Length: 398
Image (tube, rainbow, N blue to C red):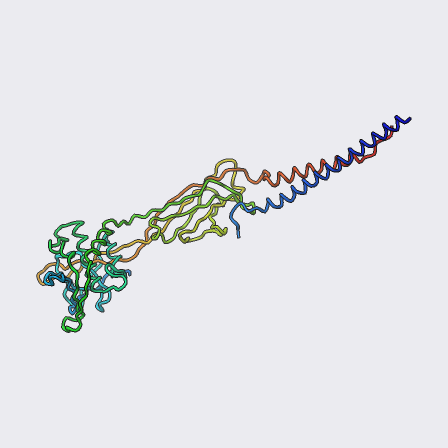
């Protein structure tokens, strides 16, 4: 009898211990499940993508203010000089203009002569000199204290020297004393009215020859070439926070020279619904400012197991230079044609570049990592409840 009692008590103890163990296990499972749910809440709110939230017309008036005189010479030998006249593109003498044919006659009327637009200038070096001179508000010799007469003389000499070195033909021929002489010039005499000696001034301009050489050398190397690069950081594709889109990695647009890139536009093709957005998730429209990075997003229902390619076409607009040669039908008293003159203005040129972005995967049919953890936790929790129920159920009498 005692033995039976002891065995029965032992069975009850084992049953109680088993019940305790199952309850503890159930609590462990429950805690894991709760943690899984909490983890799901955190993971599902992780942000894996972008958060959504001076032109000239068809004619100009070429004028000479006969009262103005500009003479550049050597201090050591003032008789060794190079005198030019300052010309303008209108009768009020405000916009300097320059000749390109050093040996042809020049208009000598103060009232002006009509000049008409001719061929476009295809020599970018010539445009470069014009753009980097007084005529365009810049300085060759002294940017801190620009002198109109010094700058105008330096610009004209640079133009003649550049054209002579590029094509030493009869049209652009320069006398030997001029080809070398400008290098020794170091003083300028200029008179706003040669009939009034008090209007004449003198200024030392040491080293002006070096400045002209620097400009001519830069003009020889000047190029109108523009280059556009479109780069993507990687081939990584992620899903946006709202789960509606697949998103590319960052795409950057680089212009060369970068200072000339004015703006760019983006066009997409290849997959319906593809959109270009900036870092704030705003759709790119129209002209985009340089330095703006962007991303391509595609609706999830447009992405399948097969590779889908989005073509990204970028058009960059660059600032550039343009100009025209102007000439007159009038001739000199000796019947010779007058010099042709040049003008420069700004223009733009476009460059295109494209890349492809590959999207591959299945639409939102699978579970992500957080969802997987959640469902595993839920299954374990249900199993734990089953264990508790099974162990808590009374043993049937036999």
